[in-house]
Length: 471
Image (cartoon, rainbow, N blue to C red; front, top):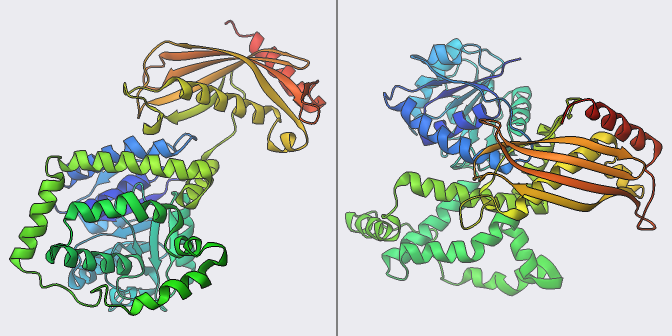
């Protein structure tokens, strides 16, 4: 069944929403009066299509189409999710929400990307207040999973629950903000840090680049994986948070910060900060900066995913949910994925070690297919690789769609021989091959032994069917 998302307002945030939904298989309908909207969203989609699939080992859903409409009513008719991302003016939002509700299904999620307004403010004068909530994302929406989901007391609990389910299905993390508050949770924290940074620049203590370096070389790396309170709990040592609070709590009363005082936004302050920012990164275009940001985010998120930690755990679980059965094709397609940026070397192409990982992933998929899965291993049985021979036939670059086919060449007793071919999806060219020989072993004795009957039967069946196809 086709799922439809309507995006009302196609700026940076609206474009990010459109890309996230489309790449997760939704049909996307966009309304934006800007004549450049299609070009701008197309560029955002280009960025997103390059990097979001790099987070996953599983194949992505079939990409949904993005279609542009000439009115709000046309865009929202029949939509399951409607995301309002128009300018941060309450009168504009009220007018647009009225247009949306005049044409959209009553059961659709109607969410606003607002970073400042509370849902009760958005609901004022609405035909169906219970349908409206805040779903505040973070840029880039197609990579960063956090969504501050903020209902009011008037919001329909069933629609809120459906919103949570949908966000989870498209790989995002809905943080249910239980009480309305100006600027929600994350932006209140960011505004406090931003305010202090402005003072540090204004008072000549630090430049914009020095402040950014303090974050990205220091505590920003901790925050990416542990957040604030868990970071400070570790800082408390074995005694934990209580010790940290006792040791560092008194300094909160010292006049270190100006968090409750805002510097006057004079032309001189704007010129000072803008000039320093230009000197820091003005040599790069906005698309270059976005590409660098996205590459770095993919590498960080994949590192967290490998450890099953923080946002990486979310991606790991979503990756698992995207996987499907291998089927019974000959040969078996054991891997479909995009080459991530952290798989490339100084020459810009996939390095040798990653080919080994890719073919290892293929054999693990085959193991699961024949029943030699995690439970089988936990019971004390497995296959160990005894020998591999890899041939590199063509270059492979970051962002390329690839797939691996696997044939069972020998499946007799404790012996298993596999033939893998890595293909480029765009033209089916063979990029590399791997001849892999494995032996079944007992994990208790660490010696070779016959597989259990159900696994041996599955292996022999595959070997017989694959032998019928000419090599």
